[in-house]
Image 1: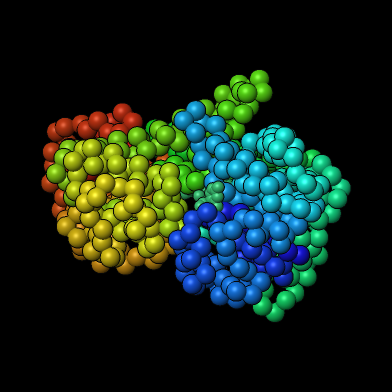
Image 2: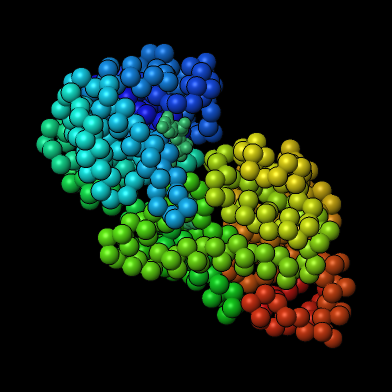
Length: 491
Ligand code: UDX
Ligand code: UDX
Protein backbone atom coordinates (compact mmCIF):
# COMPACT_ATOMS: atom_id res chain seq x y z
CA UNK A 1 0.00 0.00 0.00
CA UNK A 2 1.17 3.59 -0.60
CA UNK A 3 1.20 5.60 2.61
CA UNK A 4 2.48 8.96 3.75
CA UNK A 5 3.74 9.84 7.22
CA UNK A 6 3.74 13.58 7.93
CA UNK A 7 6.35 14.50 10.55
CA UNK A 8 9.77 12.78 10.65
CA UNK A 9 10.35 13.13 14.37
CA UNK A 10 10.85 10.33 16.90
CA UNK A 11 7.42 8.84 16.20
CA UNK A 12 6.99 9.75 12.52
CA UNK A 13 10.38 8.49 11.36
CA UNK A 14 10.11 5.19 13.23
CA UNK A 15 6.56 4.71 11.92
CA UNK A 16 7.63 5.42 8.33
CA UNK A 17 10.67 3.11 8.49
CA UNK A 18 8.70 0.27 10.08
CA UNK A 19 5.85 0.46 7.55
CA UNK A 20 8.48 0.25 4.77
CA UNK A 21 9.92 -2.76 6.61
CA UNK A 22 6.47 -4.40 6.52
CA UNK A 23 6.46 -3.95 2.73
CA UNK A 24 4.52 -0.73 2.14
CA UNK A 25 5.68 2.11 -0.08
CA UNK A 26 6.18 5.05 2.26
CA UNK A 27 6.73 8.77 1.70
CA UNK A 28 8.06 10.54 4.82
CA UNK A 29 7.23 14.25 4.80
CA UNK A 30 8.56 17.00 7.04
CA UNK A 31 8.56 20.81 6.87
CA UNK A 32 12.14 20.82 8.15
CA UNK A 33 14.18 20.98 4.93
CA UNK A 34 17.47 20.27 6.72
CA UNK A 35 16.04 17.14 8.33
CA UNK A 36 14.70 15.84 4.99
CA UNK A 37 18.01 16.57 3.19
CA UNK A 38 19.89 14.78 5.99
CA UNK A 39 17.57 11.78 5.75
CA UNK A 40 17.92 11.67 1.94
CA UNK A 41 21.71 11.64 2.37
CA UNK A 42 21.73 8.71 4.76
CA UNK A 43 21.96 10.65 8.00
CA UNK A 44 19.83 9.40 10.96
CA UNK A 45 18.83 12.49 13.02
CA UNK A 46 17.80 10.59 16.14
CA UNK A 47 19.43 7.91 18.31
CA UNK A 48 17.16 4.88 18.07
CA UNK A 49 18.19 1.21 17.99
CA UNK A 50 17.67 -0.59 14.62
CA UNK A 51 16.58 2.64 12.89
CA UNK A 52 19.87 3.02 10.96
CA UNK A 53 19.48 -0.55 9.64
CA UNK A 54 15.90 0.05 8.52
CA UNK A 55 16.78 3.32 6.81
CA UNK A 56 19.72 1.63 5.11
CA UNK A 57 17.44 -1.18 3.91
CA UNK A 58 14.62 0.93 2.52
CA UNK A 59 15.89 4.45 1.81
CA UNK A 60 15.33 5.38 -1.83
CA UNK A 61 13.39 2.17 -2.40
CA UNK A 62 10.25 1.64 -0.34
CA UNK A 63 11.02 4.73 1.75
CA UNK A 64 11.43 8.21 0.27
CA UNK A 65 11.66 11.64 1.88
CA UNK A 66 10.18 14.97 0.78
CA UNK A 67 9.12 18.36 2.06
CA UNK A 68 6.27 18.41 -0.46
CA UNK A 69 3.06 17.36 1.28
CA UNK A 70 1.17 17.99 -1.99
CA UNK A 71 3.27 15.42 -3.85
CA UNK A 72 2.79 12.89 -1.05
CA UNK A 73 -0.96 13.41 -0.72
CA UNK A 74 -1.44 12.92 -4.45
CA UNK A 75 0.47 9.63 -4.34
CA UNK A 76 -1.00 7.99 -1.24
CA UNK A 77 -4.52 6.97 -0.13
CA UNK A 78 -3.40 6.70 3.53
CA UNK A 79 -1.87 9.70 5.34
CA UNK A 80 -0.52 9.46 8.89
CA UNK A 81 -0.25 12.70 10.89
CA UNK A 82 2.74 12.46 13.27
CA UNK A 83 3.58 16.09 13.76
CA UNK A 84 4.34 17.63 17.15
CA UNK A 85 1.49 18.22 19.60
CA UNK A 86 3.41 20.20 22.21
CA UNK A 87 1.80 21.41 25.43
CA UNK A 88 0.53 25.00 25.30
CA UNK A 89 0.86 27.40 28.27
CA UNK A 90 -2.39 26.14 29.77
CA UNK A 91 -1.33 22.52 29.45
CA UNK A 92 -3.70 21.85 26.55
CA UNK A 93 -2.20 20.03 23.59
CA UNK A 94 -1.33 22.52 20.82
CA UNK A 95 -3.09 20.97 17.81
CA UNK A 96 -2.40 23.79 15.37
CA UNK A 97 0.13 21.72 13.40
CA UNK A 98 -2.33 18.84 13.17
CA UNK A 99 -5.01 21.20 11.87
CA UNK A 100 -2.59 22.77 9.37
CA UNK A 101 -1.69 19.38 7.94
CA UNK A 102 -5.36 18.31 7.78
CA UNK A 103 -6.30 21.45 5.83
CA UNK A 104 -3.39 20.95 3.44
CA UNK A 105 -4.59 17.39 2.81
CA UNK A 106 -8.08 18.75 2.06
CA UNK A 107 -6.51 21.22 -0.42
CA UNK A 108 -4.41 18.66 -2.29
CA UNK A 109 -6.58 15.51 -2.25
CA UNK A 110 -8.51 14.52 -5.37
CA UNK A 111 -9.42 10.94 -4.40
CA UNK A 112 -10.48 8.98 -1.28
CA UNK A 113 -8.16 9.44 1.70
CA UNK A 114 -7.83 7.78 5.07
CA UNK A 115 -6.33 10.39 7.42
CA UNK A 116 -4.76 8.74 10.46
CA UNK A 117 -3.91 10.43 13.76
CA UNK A 118 -0.56 9.04 14.94
CA UNK A 119 0.40 11.96 17.15
CA UNK A 120 -0.92 11.87 20.70
CA UNK A 121 -4.04 13.99 20.64
CA UNK A 122 -6.93 14.58 23.06
CA UNK A 123 -10.29 12.94 22.64
CA UNK A 124 -12.49 14.54 19.92
CA UNK A 125 -9.56 15.46 17.68
CA UNK A 126 -10.88 13.12 14.97
CA UNK A 127 -14.18 15.02 15.05
CA UNK A 128 -12.37 18.36 14.85
CA UNK A 129 -10.33 17.22 11.85
CA UNK A 130 -13.52 16.01 10.09
CA UNK A 131 -15.23 19.32 10.83
CA UNK A 132 -12.24 21.44 9.74
CA UNK A 133 -11.96 19.57 6.44
CA UNK A 134 -15.72 19.70 5.78
CA UNK A 135 -15.69 23.45 6.40
CA UNK A 136 -13.02 24.09 3.74
CA UNK A 137 -14.52 21.42 1.50
CA UNK A 138 -12.54 18.52 0.02
CA UNK A 139 -13.05 17.30 -3.55
CA UNK A 140 -12.86 13.65 -2.51
CA UNK A 141 -14.36 11.39 0.17
CA UNK A 142 -12.32 10.84 3.33
CA UNK A 143 -12.25 9.17 6.72
CA UNK A 144 -10.37 10.14 9.86
CA UNK A 145 -9.02 7.38 12.06
CA UNK A 146 -7.18 7.32 15.40
CA UNK A 147 -4.22 4.91 15.52
CA UNK A 148 -2.24 5.87 18.65
CA UNK A 149 1.38 4.80 19.01
CA UNK A 150 2.77 3.27 22.18
CA UNK A 151 6.42 3.50 21.18
CA UNK A 152 8.98 4.01 23.93
CA UNK A 153 12.07 5.94 22.94
CA UNK A 154 15.11 3.69 22.86
CA UNK A 155 13.01 0.61 21.95
CA UNK A 156 10.68 2.29 19.42
CA UNK A 157 11.41 0.01 16.45
CA UNK A 158 10.84 -3.19 18.44
CA UNK A 159 7.79 -1.63 20.13
CA UNK A 160 6.32 -0.92 16.66
CA UNK A 161 7.11 -4.33 15.18
CA UNK A 162 6.23 -6.33 18.32
CA UNK A 163 3.40 -4.33 19.87
CA UNK A 164 1.37 -5.50 22.88
CA UNK A 165 -1.60 -4.28 20.82
CA UNK A 166 -2.43 -2.18 17.78
CA UNK A 167 -5.36 0.15 18.46
CA UNK A 168 -7.44 1.36 15.52
CA UNK A 169 -10.25 3.81 16.27
CA UNK A 170 -12.39 4.04 13.12
CA UNK A 171 -16.01 5.15 12.77
CA UNK A 172 -16.27 3.69 9.25
CA UNK A 173 -15.88 0.06 8.25
CA UNK A 174 -14.14 1.13 5.04
CA UNK A 175 -11.39 2.92 6.98
CA UNK A 176 -11.13 0.12 9.55
CA UNK A 177 -10.53 -2.35 6.69
CA UNK A 178 -7.77 -0.17 5.24
CA UNK A 179 -5.90 -0.06 8.58
CA UNK A 180 -6.48 -3.78 9.14
CA UNK A 181 -4.85 -4.49 5.77
CA UNK A 182 -1.98 -2.14 6.56
CA UNK A 183 -1.06 -4.04 9.76
CA UNK A 184 -1.78 -7.48 8.32
CA UNK A 185 1.91 -8.54 8.15
CA UNK A 186 2.02 -8.13 11.96
CA UNK A 187 -1.47 -9.40 12.89
CA UNK A 188 -1.11 -12.54 10.73
CA UNK A 189 2.39 -13.14 12.12
CA UNK A 190 3.73 -13.28 8.54
CA UNK A 191 6.37 -10.61 9.23
CA UNK A 192 7.84 -12.61 12.12
CA UNK A 193 8.43 -15.60 9.82
CA UNK A 194 10.59 -13.54 7.43
CA UNK A 195 14.33 -14.39 7.66
CA UNK A 196 15.24 -10.68 7.74
CA UNK A 197 12.73 -9.75 10.45
CA UNK A 198 14.25 -7.25 12.92
CA UNK A 199 12.17 -8.58 15.81
CA UNK A 200 9.86 -11.54 16.31
CA UNK A 201 6.77 -12.51 18.24
CA UNK A 202 5.58 -16.08 18.68
CA UNK A 203 2.05 -15.12 17.71
CA UNK A 204 0.50 -12.43 15.51
CA UNK A 205 0.02 -8.98 17.01
CA UNK A 206 -3.39 -8.17 18.49
CA UNK A 207 -5.50 -5.60 16.65
CA UNK A 208 -8.11 -3.80 18.76
CA UNK A 209 -10.84 -2.08 16.72
CA UNK A 210 -12.72 0.67 18.58
CA UNK A 211 -14.59 3.86 17.81
CA UNK A 212 -12.32 6.88 17.27
CA UNK A 213 -12.98 8.60 20.61
CA UNK A 214 -12.17 5.44 22.57
CA UNK A 215 -8.86 5.04 20.74
CA UNK A 216 -7.91 8.65 21.47
CA UNK A 217 -8.67 8.04 25.15
CA UNK A 218 -6.78 4.74 25.27
CA UNK A 219 -3.57 6.62 24.53
CA UNK A 220 -3.99 9.34 27.16
CA UNK A 221 -5.30 6.90 29.75
CA UNK A 222 -2.45 4.44 29.14
CA UNK A 223 0.24 7.10 29.53
CA UNK A 224 -1.48 8.57 32.57
CA UNK A 225 -1.75 5.14 34.20
CA UNK A 226 1.94 4.35 33.57
CA UNK A 227 2.99 7.73 34.99
CA UNK A 228 0.70 7.13 37.98
CA UNK A 229 2.38 3.75 38.60
CA UNK A 230 5.78 5.47 38.62
CA UNK A 231 4.63 8.23 40.97
CA UNK A 232 3.01 5.63 43.22
CA UNK A 233 6.24 3.67 43.63
CA UNK A 234 8.19 6.91 44.13
CA UNK A 235 5.78 7.82 46.92
CA UNK A 236 6.22 4.36 48.43
CA UNK A 237 10.00 4.85 48.18
CA UNK A 238 9.67 7.99 50.32
CA UNK A 239 7.74 6.05 52.94
CA UNK A 240 10.48 3.37 52.81
CA UNK A 241 13.13 6.01 53.46
CA UNK A 242 11.15 7.34 56.42
CA UNK A 243 10.66 3.94 58.04
CA UNK A 244 13.94 2.27 57.02
CA UNK A 245 12.39 -0.30 54.66
CA UNK A 246 13.78 -1.26 51.22
CA UNK A 247 11.64 -0.19 48.25
CA UNK A 248 13.21 -2.78 45.94
CA UNK A 249 12.00 -5.48 48.30
CA UNK A 250 8.60 -3.81 48.27
CA UNK A 251 8.63 -3.70 44.44
CA UNK A 252 9.34 -7.43 44.31
CA UNK A 253 6.53 -8.12 46.76
CA UNK A 254 4.08 -5.91 44.83
CA UNK A 255 5.23 -6.77 41.29
CA UNK A 256 4.83 -10.52 41.70
CA UNK A 257 1.10 -9.92 42.06
CA UNK A 258 -0.06 -10.55 38.49
CA UNK A 259 -2.73 -7.85 38.97
CA UNK A 260 0.08 -5.29 39.58
CA UNK A 261 3.05 -6.64 37.53
CA UNK A 262 6.72 -5.70 37.93
CA UNK A 263 7.04 -3.31 34.98
CA UNK A 264 7.11 0.47 35.53
CA UNK A 265 7.75 -0.05 39.23
CA UNK A 266 11.29 1.38 39.16
CA UNK A 267 11.64 4.21 41.69
CA UNK A 268 13.93 7.06 40.81
CA UNK A 269 14.31 10.79 40.31
CA UNK A 270 11.03 10.85 38.38
CA UNK A 271 9.64 10.38 34.91
CA UNK A 272 10.42 12.73 32.00
CA UNK A 273 10.41 12.67 28.21
CA UNK A 274 8.30 14.20 25.45
CA UNK A 275 5.21 12.24 26.34
CA UNK A 276 4.29 11.60 29.99
CA UNK A 277 4.58 15.21 31.29
CA UNK A 278 2.75 16.70 28.30
CA UNK A 279 0.15 13.94 27.94
CA UNK A 280 -0.76 14.11 31.63
CA UNK A 281 -1.35 17.86 31.41
CA UNK A 282 -3.36 17.44 28.19
CA UNK A 283 -5.47 14.61 29.67
CA UNK A 284 -6.07 16.61 32.85
CA UNK A 285 -7.15 19.59 30.78
CA UNK A 286 -9.44 17.77 28.34
CA UNK A 287 -11.11 15.88 31.21
CA UNK A 288 -12.03 19.15 32.93
CA UNK A 289 -13.19 20.61 29.57
CA UNK A 290 -15.69 17.76 29.57
CA UNK A 291 -16.75 18.30 33.18
CA UNK A 292 -14.56 15.87 35.11
CA UNK A 293 -12.09 17.23 37.71
CA UNK A 294 -9.40 14.52 37.34
CA UNK A 295 -7.56 15.55 40.54
CA UNK A 296 -5.71 12.22 40.77
CA UNK A 297 -3.55 13.34 37.84
CA UNK A 298 -2.52 16.48 39.77
CA UNK A 299 -1.04 14.32 42.50
CA UNK A 300 0.76 12.15 39.95
CA UNK A 301 2.42 15.32 38.59
CA UNK A 302 3.06 16.77 42.09
CA UNK A 303 4.81 13.59 43.29
CA UNK A 304 6.95 13.62 40.15
CA UNK A 305 7.98 17.25 40.55
CA UNK A 306 8.69 16.56 44.24
CA UNK A 307 11.15 13.79 43.33
CA UNK A 308 13.62 16.32 41.96
CA UNK A 309 13.32 18.50 45.08
CA UNK A 310 13.75 15.48 47.34
CA UNK A 311 16.84 14.41 45.40
CA UNK A 312 18.47 17.83 45.82
CA UNK A 313 17.68 17.62 49.56
CA UNK A 314 19.31 14.18 49.67
CA UNK A 315 22.47 15.60 48.05
CA UNK A 316 22.54 18.41 50.63
CA UNK A 317 22.09 15.92 53.48
CA UNK A 318 25.20 14.15 52.25
CA UNK A 319 27.39 17.07 51.18
CA UNK A 320 26.11 19.81 53.49
CA UNK A 321 26.99 23.00 51.59
CA UNK A 322 26.85 22.59 47.83
CA UNK A 323 28.47 25.90 46.88
CA UNK A 324 31.88 25.25 45.30
CA UNK A 325 31.48 21.47 45.43
CA UNK A 326 32.47 19.45 42.35
CA UNK A 327 29.68 17.09 41.34
CA UNK A 328 30.02 14.35 38.77
CA UNK A 329 26.82 13.43 36.91
CA UNK A 330 26.22 10.24 34.96
CA UNK A 331 23.25 10.64 32.61
CA UNK A 332 21.63 13.59 30.83
CA UNK A 333 18.92 11.86 28.76
CA UNK A 334 15.43 11.43 30.27
CA UNK A 335 16.07 7.67 30.25
CA UNK A 336 18.63 5.16 29.03
CA UNK A 337 18.79 4.21 25.36
CA UNK A 338 17.91 7.61 23.91
CA UNK A 339 19.58 10.94 23.14
CA UNK A 340 16.36 12.78 24.05
CA UNK A 341 16.61 15.32 26.91
CA UNK A 342 13.08 16.68 26.64
CA UNK A 343 11.70 17.08 30.20
CA UNK A 344 14.70 15.11 31.45
CA UNK A 345 14.84 14.78 35.28
CA UNK A 346 18.65 14.84 34.91
CA UNK A 347 18.53 18.30 33.36
CA UNK A 348 16.15 19.44 36.12
CA UNK A 349 18.54 18.24 38.85
CA UNK A 350 21.54 19.86 37.13
CA UNK A 351 19.64 23.14 36.78
CA UNK A 352 19.02 23.14 40.56
CA UNK A 353 22.68 22.32 41.26
CA UNK A 354 23.78 25.25 39.12
CA UNK A 355 21.59 27.53 41.26
CA UNK A 356 23.60 26.21 44.24
CA UNK A 357 26.78 27.22 42.39
CA UNK A 358 28.24 23.74 42.16
CA UNK A 359 30.71 22.71 39.48
CA UNK A 360 29.02 20.00 37.43
CA UNK A 361 30.90 17.56 35.18
CA UNK A 362 28.55 15.31 33.22
CA UNK A 363 28.80 12.26 30.99
CA UNK A 364 26.11 10.68 28.81
CA UNK A 365 26.61 7.99 26.13
CA UNK A 366 24.39 9.78 23.58
CA UNK A 367 22.64 12.92 24.85
CA UNK A 368 25.55 15.36 25.36
CA UNK A 369 24.95 17.35 22.16
CA UNK A 370 21.21 17.61 22.88
CA UNK A 371 21.99 18.70 26.48
CA UNK A 372 24.25 21.46 25.16
CA UNK A 373 21.20 22.76 23.26
CA UNK A 374 19.13 23.12 26.44
CA UNK A 375 21.71 24.00 29.15
CA UNK A 376 23.28 27.49 29.22
CA UNK A 377 26.50 27.60 27.22
CA UNK A 378 29.53 26.68 29.39
CA UNK A 379 27.34 26.15 32.46
CA UNK A 380 28.60 22.60 32.96
CA UNK A 381 31.58 20.56 31.79
CA UNK A 382 31.07 17.51 29.55
CA UNK A 383 33.32 14.48 29.98
CA UNK A 384 34.12 11.86 27.35
CA UNK A 385 33.72 8.96 29.73
CA UNK A 386 32.32 8.23 33.21
CA UNK A 387 35.75 8.02 34.86
CA UNK A 388 36.82 11.41 33.51
CA UNK A 389 33.56 12.83 34.85
CA UNK A 390 34.29 11.35 38.29
CA UNK A 391 37.80 12.80 38.51
CA UNK A 392 38.27 14.71 41.81
CA UNK A 393 34.53 14.95 42.37
CA UNK A 394 33.09 15.32 45.85
CA UNK A 395 30.27 13.02 44.88
CA UNK A 396 28.88 11.18 41.86
CA UNK A 397 25.21 11.29 40.89
CA UNK A 398 23.49 8.72 38.69
CA UNK A 399 20.53 10.35 36.98
CA UNK A 400 19.79 8.16 33.91
CA UNK A 401 19.40 4.37 33.77
CA UNK A 402 21.89 3.65 30.97
CA UNK A 403 22.88 -0.06 30.79
CA UNK A 404 26.46 1.12 30.32
CA UNK A 405 26.50 2.49 33.88
CA UNK A 406 25.58 -0.89 35.38
CA UNK A 407 28.83 -2.29 33.92
CA UNK A 408 31.13 0.39 35.28
CA UNK A 409 34.52 -0.61 36.80
CA UNK A 410 33.55 0.54 40.28
CA UNK A 411 37.04 0.21 41.74
CA UNK A 412 38.40 2.46 38.96
CA UNK A 413 35.52 4.86 39.52
CA UNK A 414 36.20 4.98 43.26
CA UNK A 415 39.87 5.78 42.61
CA UNK A 416 38.85 8.81 40.55
CA UNK A 417 36.57 10.35 43.16
CA UNK A 418 37.83 12.79 45.80
CA UNK A 419 35.31 11.18 48.17
CA UNK A 420 33.83 7.73 47.41
CA UNK A 421 30.28 8.99 47.68
CA UNK A 422 27.63 7.90 45.17
CA UNK A 423 24.05 9.20 45.18
CA UNK A 424 22.06 7.01 42.81
CA UNK A 425 18.82 8.43 41.46
CA UNK A 426 18.09 5.25 39.50
CA UNK A 427 18.98 2.48 42.01
CA UNK A 428 21.36 0.91 39.51
CA UNK A 429 23.66 -0.67 42.09
CA UNK A 430 23.26 -3.08 44.97
CA UNK A 431 23.91 -1.31 48.31
CA UNK A 432 25.78 -4.25 49.86
CA UNK A 433 28.14 -4.44 46.88
CA UNK A 434 28.80 -0.73 47.02
CA UNK A 435 29.58 -0.93 50.73
CA UNK A 436 31.96 -3.83 50.11
CA UNK A 437 33.77 -1.55 47.68
CA UNK A 438 33.94 1.10 50.42
CA UNK A 439 31.53 3.49 48.79
CA UNK A 440 29.18 5.69 50.74
CA UNK A 441 26.14 4.82 48.66
CA UNK A 442 22.81 6.59 48.84
CA UNK A 443 19.86 5.61 46.66
CA UNK A 444 16.08 5.95 46.38
CA UNK A 445 13.92 4.27 49.00
CA UNK A 446 16.63 2.05 50.39
CA UNK A 447 18.66 2.20 53.64
CA UNK A 448 22.09 3.67 53.15
CA UNK A 449 24.75 1.04 53.70
CA UNK A 450 28.17 2.43 54.18
CA UNK A 451 31.60 0.93 54.65
CA UNK A 452 33.99 2.61 57.05
CA UNK A 453 35.92 5.06 54.89
CA UNK A 454 38.64 7.48 55.93
CA UNK A 455 36.07 10.28 55.43
CA UNK A 456 33.57 8.42 57.63
CA UNK A 457 36.13 7.50 60.26
CA UNK A 458 36.73 11.21 60.85
CA UNK A 459 32.99 11.94 60.81
CA UNK A 460 32.05 9.04 63.09
CA UNK A 461 34.29 10.36 65.81
CA UNK A 462 32.27 13.56 65.85
CA UNK A 463 28.95 11.80 65.15
CA UNK A 464 29.03 10.22 68.59
CA UNK A 465 29.03 13.72 69.99
CA UNK A 466 26.59 15.20 67.52
CA UNK A 467 23.34 13.78 66.32
CA UNK A 468 22.81 14.64 62.65
CA UNK A 469 19.45 15.66 61.30
CA UNK A 470 19.25 13.65 58.12
CA UNK A 471 17.00 14.05 55.07
CA UNK A 472 13.36 13.48 55.82
CA UNK A 473 14.06 14.47 59.45
CA UNK A 474 15.22 11.07 60.61
CA UNK A 475 17.84 11.14 63.28
CA UNK A 476 21.21 9.69 62.28
CA UNK A 477 22.35 7.07 64.79
CA UNK A 478 25.62 5.25 64.51
CA UNK A 479 26.52 1.92 65.94
CA UNK A 480 30.20 1.70 66.61
CA UNK A 481 31.66 -1.35 65.00
CA UNK A 482 35.17 -2.60 64.42
CA UNK A 483 36.70 -0.42 61.64
CA UNK A 484 38.09 -3.01 59.19
CA UNK A 485 35.24 -4.71 57.41
CA UNK A 486 32.07 -3.40 58.92
CA UNK A 487 29.09 -2.13 56.99
CA UNK A 488 27.50 0.69 58.81
CA UNK A 489 23.73 0.86 58.40
CA UNK A 490 22.62 4.45 58.87
CA UNK A 491 19.04 4.32 60.03
C1 UDX B 1 5.19 13.75 18.18
C2 UDX B 1 4.20 14.39 19.11
O1 UDX B 1 4.83 15.46 19.73
C3 UDX B 1 3.74 13.43 20.17
O2 UDX B 1 2.67 13.96 20.88
C4 UDX B 1 3.20 12.27 19.53
O3 UDX B 1 2.91 11.35 20.47
C5 UDX B 1 4.13 11.74 18.52
O4 UDX B 1 4.62 12.66 17.61
P1 UDX B 1 7.72 13.37 18.32
O5 UDX B 1 7.81 12.52 17.12
O6 UDX B 1 8.61 13.06 19.43
O7 UDX B 1 6.27 13.39 18.94
O8 UDX B 1 7.82 14.92 17.89
P2 UDX B 1 8.97 15.63 17.18
O9 UDX B 1 10.20 14.84 17.38
O10 UDX B 1 8.89 17.03 17.62
O11 UDX B 1 8.60 15.50 15.61
C6 UDX B 1 7.57 16.21 15.02
C7 UDX B 1 8.03 16.45 13.56
O12 UDX B 1 6.93 17.02 12.84
C8 UDX B 1 9.20 17.42 13.45
O13 UDX B 1 10.21 16.85 12.67
C9 UDX B 1 8.59 18.64 12.73
O14 UDX B 1 9.50 19.28 11.86
C10 UDX B 1 7.45 17.99 11.96
N1 UDX B 1 6.36 18.91 11.60
C11 UDX B 1 5.79 19.69 12.55
C12 UDX B 1 5.91 18.91 10.27
O15 UDX B 1 6.44 18.22 9.43
N2 UDX B 1 4.86 19.75 9.94
C13 UDX B 1 4.28 20.55 10.86
O16 UDX B 1 3.35 21.27 10.51
C14 UDX B 1 4.75 20.52 12.22
C1 UDX C 1 6.30 6.63 26.96
C2 UDX C 1 5.36 5.42 26.92
O1 UDX C 1 5.98 4.33 27.58
C3 UDX C 1 5.08 5.04 25.48
O2 UDX C 1 4.14 3.97 25.43
C4 UDX C 1 4.46 6.24 24.78
O3 UDX C 1 4.23 5.95 23.45
C5 UDX C 1 5.38 7.43 24.88
O4 UDX C 1 5.68 7.70 26.22
P1 UDX C 1 8.86 7.10 26.66
O5 UDX C 1 8.53 8.46 27.10
O6 UDX C 1 9.74 6.90 25.50
O7 UDX C 1 7.50 6.26 26.38
O8 UDX C 1 9.61 6.40 27.89
P2 UDX C 1 9.26 5.37 29.06
O9 UDX C 1 10.10 4.19 28.91
O10 UDX C 1 7.82 5.19 29.21
O11 UDX C 1 9.81 6.22 30.31
C6 UDX C 1 9.20 7.43 30.61
C7 UDX C 1 9.88 8.02 31.85
O12 UDX C 1 9.53 7.26 33.00
C8 UDX C 1 11.41 8.02 31.77
O13 UDX C 1 11.91 9.21 32.34
C9 UDX C 1 11.79 6.83 32.65
O14 UDX C 1 13.06 6.98 33.24
C10 UDX C 1 10.70 6.88 33.71
N1 UDX C 1 10.42 5.59 34.35
C11 UDX C 1 9.96 4.56 33.58
C12 UDX C 1 10.60 5.47 35.73
O15 UDX C 1 11.03 6.39 36.42
N2 UDX C 1 10.30 4.26 36.32
C13 UDX C 1 9.83 3.20 35.60
O16 UDX C 1 9.58 2.14 36.20
C14 UDX C 1 9.65 3.34 34.18
